[in-house]
Image 1: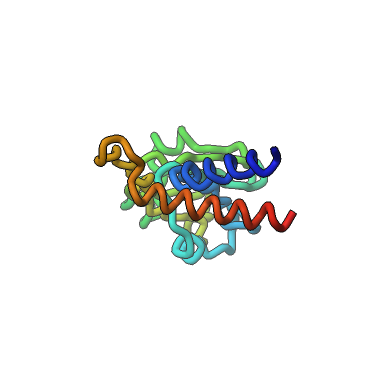
Image 2: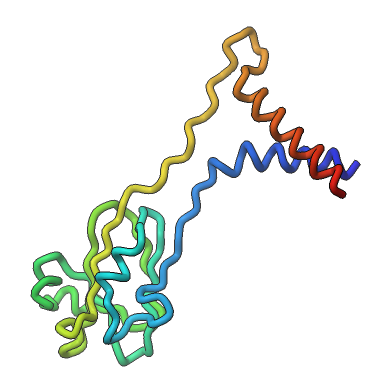
Length: 164
């Protein structure tokens, strides 16, 4: 009975799991968080941000903030008034990357951006799910790719059951 359940679970896992694409959660600056003396350019270049991912700005509330600006303001460390009014200040600010492109963030505290507390996040499209399997073309019989997959799943299940 247990081996039959194992085979079913493995079959479902091999068919369904590849279609599941998970988003990634990033902490800006990793263990150092959002603060001074972190090379955010190097940090961001080591990542691959995708639509659906989230970024968390972690810092001591009151010590910093997070303001999203445009490219020219980012380069000049300029905080325009509309952006300043929308500053994030919780110390645990989560932002979902909802579309491909570039997003620019900086700290609006006096002198922090000039000291390097700013990050450019280049966002790529989400990874595509595999296309759905085409319908059978031979009168309803299961086609070769699915049969090959099932044979592999069954062989693995038999091997796992033999190890139990």
